[in-house]
Amino acid sequence: MHAYLPTYDDVLRASQVLHGVAHRTPVFTSHTLNTQLGAQVFFKCENFQRIGAFKFRGGYNALSNLTPAQRKAGVVAFSSGNHAQAVALAAQLLGIKATIVMPHDAPAIKKTATLGYGAQVVEYDRYTQDREQVTQQLIKQHGFSLIPPFNHPDVIAGQGTAVKELLDEVGQLDRLYVPLGGGGLLSGSLLAAQALSPDCAVYGVEPESGNDAQQSLLQGKIVQIPAPHSIADGALTTALGNLTFQLIQRHVHDILTVTDAQLVQAMRFFAERMKMVVEPTGCLGAAAVIHSIVPVQGQRIGVLLSGGNVDLKTYAGLLAPADC
Image 1 (cartoon, rainbow, N blue to C red):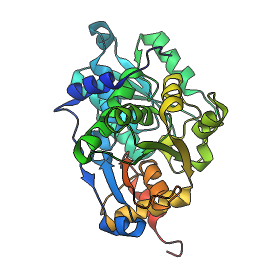
Image 2: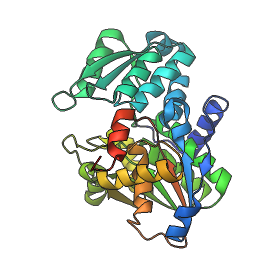
Image 3: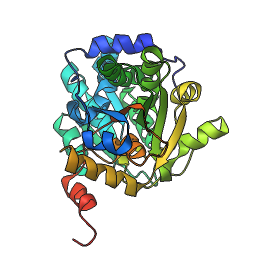
């Protein structure tokens, strides 16, 4: 648990660390969708980030801030896939040994990529084992530094650079929609939006079956839920972190949920109309906008597409018509 709550100054520092290392991802629009909604929608395409997801930003920033002794000992992370790849690639670039604790049912494409970046993978069962207990045992044995997927000030600050780039490029927004699992991306996004577009209402969007953050916001405390089931495999967290909850509670406008069916429709829209592969988790914010969970007419809207790492067989199965 980390006591230090990051600020926008940390996002600025992370932006300097990531300059020339992380991709400055494109911002795309769709005339079809803008006409359909009567709004201007700007998609920040982190599916084109290194390792195919925004997670590279936070992972690289966190590893860059390790001491020489910590770098020598190596790092450990737990992740369903994108954070795993982010830490693995960042560690490879910085010459640090990485071990990743990953659920045995993580998408094969993400597991293969993590191994390809040179990390060691330790598998666990997400429904019967506690990933944090597995990770702590490895820390005890090897002296690794833990790089958690969201509840870490350097990770949060790194993730916030995506919205900094978006707002630097498109200017003030009325609303911003951000995929929400453990809250690292949303927390960093809130810091950037508060600084650069203070009148922007920021929404976190999570799977309907995994709405722990929505419950936490309503109850004013961190609510833990059983491991949820959803095609949004990158957002299957059971609780927010102490840092992410504080930032979300202070700054978020609201937390929305979408169904798996709505995620599939968003994936199909990106494939058919914008010629992009976006993974289910990456579509959380977009699904809320496309389906007007909150009316959007007349608004300038930013949407983070958080990643594009999806197994092609799974992807094809989700997008194929039911009668195929």
